[in-house]
Image 1: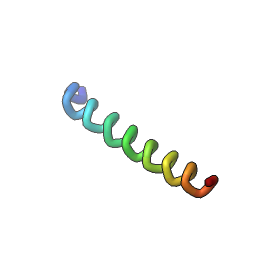
Image 2: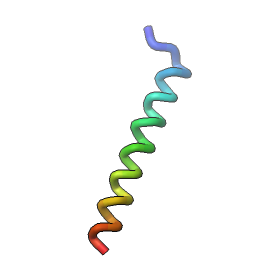
Image 3: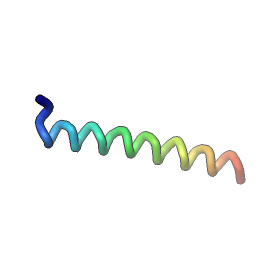
Image 4: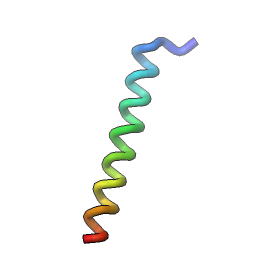
Length: 30
């Protein structure tokens, strides 16, 4: 079983990467 701390870290990392991709896409659209 994955520990809650590791799971939270993994979710945060994926969320941050998704935000970075969205920011890049918005920057290209401008």
